[in-house]
Length: 302
Image (tube, rainbow, N blue to C red):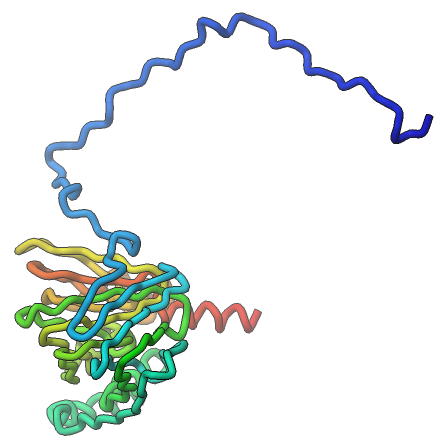
């Protein structure tokens, strides 16, 4: 008889010892109680990417957001003559029936008040060029965009891994969006460049200029990592790290955190934050582009 034909008896595990019929789950203690002196935040939780809208419609089309929240793609189906504006280089694919045009819009006239401060910024930059990028401060003084015209479907995506979320404009609420966060907008949405104060320009993480978005339609914003949305009630405050800010409709002030001087703060990781005060809504991203860039640089150097 060959080795393959030989039948070997299967060993069975030994029986369990002891009486387990009377086993019961141990009694559970009372649920934890909250100190009445501490304010409750359970009524205003921050919403993460899966809780945000994934599909909807706009004038002349419909949209759907797929593969959330690290490899997200925006799919827009346009009716004949309907248009959507997208960030240059964001197109993944489109139907052959869709027409595409490129636009370059200069906004220097709207930024004239900013030039008054550029001389002071230049002097400041001479002393602190290792910590701040003058190029980053003035990025956004011109806007370039791709215009897609239906009929057909267009697929858009960010440059890196991250999420896409829609902001529905009602014609009344005005939003401010970081220049890096724009992905696309539908017809009826206006996007203009306006300057911030010097302190916000230097320390908010958004540079000297930001987009002011208004009108009626849908504005699509991209992020690095997942998205967290927080709706603030009147007088409610929320503190956001300056590298994670994406879009907001609430007022904020820049504050410094951490002990020690400027050099100590930069060395220990302490820095500047944005203190938002409601009413309004704030969107943040779970990854900071600047910190990620620094991490990649450090890893490359070994």
